[in-house]
Length: 120
Length: 120
DNA sequence: AATAGTATTATTCAACTTGTATAGTACAAA
DNA sequence: TTTGTACTATACAAGTTGAATAATACTATT
Image (cartoon, rainbow over all chains, first blue to last red; front, side):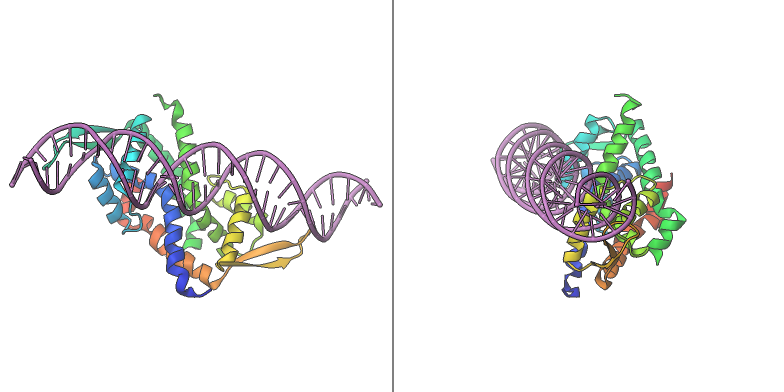
């Protein structure tokens, strides 16, 4: 095998990696401020430097699910164009969930041990 | 819905999150030094503070796959007890893949913008 | 010699998430 | 009326892990 396949391996890995990350990114987008789907998508792609590119359908699907279990909610507002938009935001439970998740899963990467492995 | 379901939501989220993370953790374990399956499992559980608890079968499955595409390799060594062990390590291609992955996907969390969102 | 423990390979099914495709509803502005 | 925007809903393929199961092979103990 040659190095030619590295880009494919990388994007394949990122595809898998993304599946577990999307919830986190949606939550980070909402923590940044109330948004509707288009804005969430734009936020995620921009902040992840296009590492995470998500389909709107996936966002709708997830947001409906989160709404159902009461970790996000929305307020309907008029947009500049077209029909009304649903501006999603984190509920208190969603906010608490995110904090716990970050504490347990993300801050690991800031620990000295893991950080040393990451950096060299 | 009450807050009673928060622990379930958190572990359910972590379950999903883990699916994309396992490859990264295996690679970090091998970057730390050549290891056989039991040691990889122990490394991951310890360093992730039991956030990631992986089945040995998943490790075997993944390692065979990585071997097949030449991003890891192994050397057979005798153990203190029992039959021979396969000590896995990253190939040059695996090392390069890991570096690229970290650069694109992990270092985001160290950027000022994302870091601010994570921290408050 | 027989047994128990260790290390590994291999397969299958359930559960879950995303991409993709498809179909449909609803509203606003030109 | 047409076009564009926002959203709902379903279905299938692809990929990953957990869990269960079955099997091989070597070592050390009894």
